[in-house]
Image 1 (cartoon, rainbow over the protein chains, first blue to last red):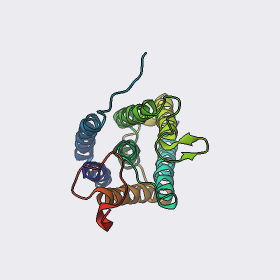
Image 2: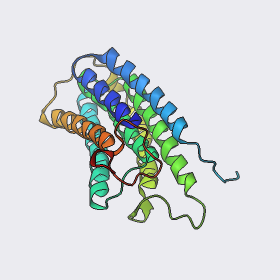
Image 3: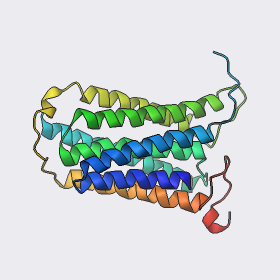
Image 4: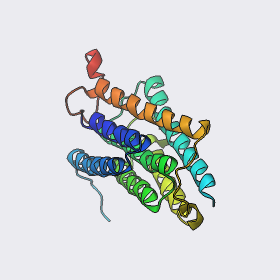
Length: 52
Length: 180
């Protein structure tokens, strides 16, 4: 569900860009990116057994 | 670099992103391998990569549009890099099949790095930013836009078919829509 929504946000950003809504497109892109990072943090919970 | 050439190269970038999304679909269907949430997020990052070039096509090349593409590439590098680290230990078979010797997420990492490098290289050419007129687009550019929007919407439907109204499991085994 979460990624389905994110695809929808970026598709809407592209359609807004195409139909002359540059500001709307940029706002949708930034909102989508923030939500994507939040979704990434939600899923990236497994501990990495690595040593740097 | 003229604005006209920059627009053409941005359209080529859209075709490259479309090719990646299409290849992911073809491999998903032919190998019957469902994308995990991190894999889906990498596809989301490829969709996000396309917003900057679409803006460049429609409103003319601007540094801010290239900046958006760089941010999307960084997010993609973060998601694919994490998945590489999850499976980097010796003996780990990785997630999904290896294609041409590397897993999807390794190829995605290469793709995002290449996108970041290409975007940075595009930003080196200042002449493309001088003209603020709306570019006149031909069939080549319009088809690129239609193709990428179609593929992102197809990914949206694919995500719904796989997970439905719930959060996707870490290791999906079937499509929610078909009772899996």
